[in-house]
Image (cartoon, rainbow, N blue to C red; front, top):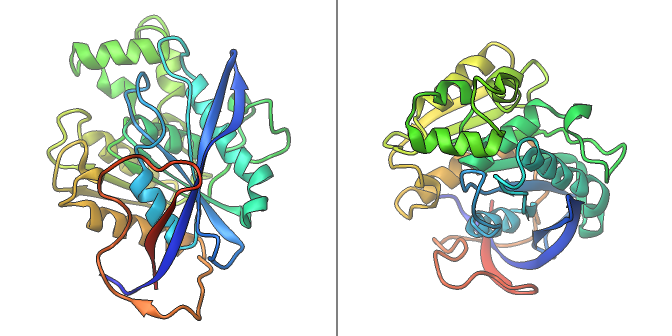
Length: 304
């Protein structure tokens, strides 16, 4: 554990950022208004098998990163089967581009944007990183804004849909709903949605963590992407104790968060308040209780 300076984080919820197919998507912004700027931006993308869920899964990570001096954004994205690939990817890119065009009012630095995702969200952030500024997947709302990333972290992601063939009827059903068909019907979608296929030398530094006991997404998915990136970019890969939900498990959270924050810190310079007195203690965001509401303030600890 490192020493940290006390901070107060606010959250502004349900800020509209993208409208597509008649759906208006919103994001939450976590910010420490007392932190020195300009602040790097962290985009956090939740899981949910591409079919269920809503923003809020990463609230604890968001509070902790904001307390370190990041502006943190957690967006919604469109869900399958109503919205198939690449809808969710386009939405994540729209969130990244919103940060580049709108987040300066929060004191953000649009040149330093990183992303973190879990499960389906890990696929989306890694795929966004692999296809940065690819016109085939860019939203229409922010012309000229870049969707590139300075660094990306994936927790327990699906990175090669082709390797998930034969993984069982549940996986095949999810893949068919999300991608719009079977591998035999639309093999190109299975390629386009797989970071293993799309990654090249333009991929930013990548950290991949996977639960060694994950029974939802096989750990070899992260190993496949790590092997691919090892030849073209900078990648770190490790297995973590625990199952699919290891990033949110109390026993593993501190280690996982520390690895993530340290990785981001190496690739974006976090501007911190040098005058703040250091403190120590375990208080880093809520471990349970109600979701934060708009305007709520949280006492956190910015790391030194």
